[in-house]
Length: 123
Image 1 (cartoon, helix red, strand yellow):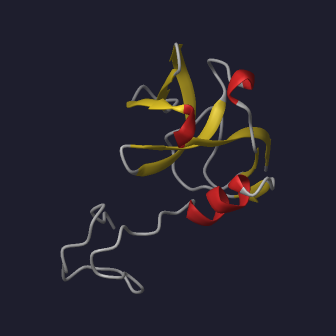
Image 2: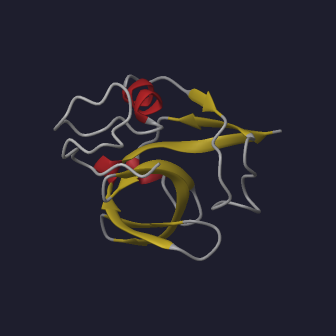
């Protein structure tokens, strides 16, 4: 279900929504753990990273420093309010262009919107 970044007391609101508060995204709890310096593992669903990550594979993401990031890295990030495990497609100064592995560009972000880097993918 698609949920707006700020609920407007819609009829399709999901359980637990605090009417007017931004919704909790699929990766919010993992982001909190990464910000606390922990490494996290989870099984994301979807086909946007097909060829690099298949739906349901176990992904391990670790905290990362800005100067460690390179074009081609897969990062857990937030772009325009949505959370993604997507590729760094380009770096321009202090900005990072984020996109998936099937041709879509999500947008440009700064390091403050990057929470961790993919370090391992397992079946």
